[in-house]
Image 1 (cartoon, protein in one colour):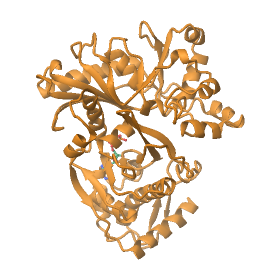
Image 2 (tube, protein in one colour; image 1 turned 180 degrees about the horizontal axis):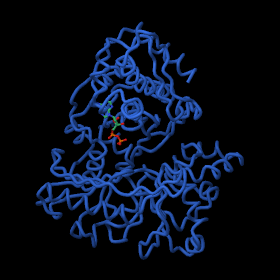
Image 3 (cartoon, rainbow, N blue to C red; image 1 turned 90 degrees about the horizontal axis):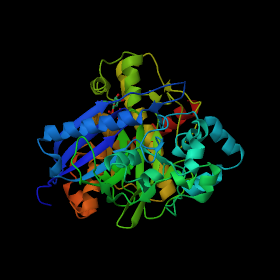
Length: 494
Ligand code: ADP
């Protein structure tokens, strides 16, 4: 290892890029973070400039090294994690993007998805890829680029173009255009990879008109994809050796290595992922089946469910209602009452996702009377966030046939002890908050380190992973049933 005592984690997110330098004990030694431009060319369209993403990544790496007080040559490995599904297309030789990247939130391919559904492709997509036929995923976005950018199809057929999600773009740039590669977790979000075969699927490629010539190699989540070359922020010759999509990296960073172990990220929305082991589990409840990671030839699969609104409900209380000044004030306000009384809040501010799938549902406060105070409303909002996650967890338990032994949490809203305690109460499961809640960055660092033997095995990761606080369920069964009963009634009315 010599002087190479550090690992660099690059977390390329939807609104900002971030780089973190960690040592072998996973201490954070330096960080750099930079926001970049969001483009909204039409209603429902969201784009990013690939070159700006790259420039912001270089900037963050330089800043992280500076703040850690180390040189690039002190790095043993680089791990990458990224906003998933966002789709780019560039010239293989020059690296020049053909168009801005189409972001995961972009809905421009809704009509195309509608057409594919009308042709009866939905079941096939689900069976082959584990996904639902939705503009969210990369497949229809690549087709849009190939069909809409002048000359793109001809160039693709001539082998001149490369498609990639952001992981692929970053490795391509880091290695001086030498490596065109993605990892299984990112590939599982393209709608082009077979979930069982872990290879590009001929039927999906032909359904989506995507030629093999543009597709990257699919690799494991920890292996040497290439060496840095020609970067501004780093010297040549540092191995890029770990990659996973952001939610999968968080599952890994939470050390959820045993089937059933789950993590939930509470940000603007919430993402729940459960490790389901070495075989994919098909969902009956509208959850997604996805690849967690592939390590040492072994693939770990996951079930995934998300809520569109989690912390965003707290923002609404702050900005929409003006009930609080800052997000963290909600806890003190909620504590002004002992219980939410009869008040129930359904956070369907943007429809209801899995397992309800009711896009037209809208938010609801139920059970208000003349004794209701601001405190009751605040408490009900926090409970509503936890209750929708309980619905997801219930669906996951049914789909997987497994209990959840540990429910690990991260994201901006997990500072809220009242929310975490209620989550434990309503799940009837221990909720575990780690010391380091930057689990996405941690996951990428682990993968990068494992790829070069900086850490030897996932057990090393388990050893350094530390819980900050365990919230144990305290609510009686009767009270829990009462809360769930009121919630289910309210959801029907949302
Ligand atoms: P994202 O990555 O989606 O931008 P973060 O992980 O940074 O989100 O979390 C920010 C979200 O957490 C915001 O929606 C905010 O309202 C919520 N939040 C922050 N602090 C608290 C708190 N103490 N209690 C409840 N929600 C909070």
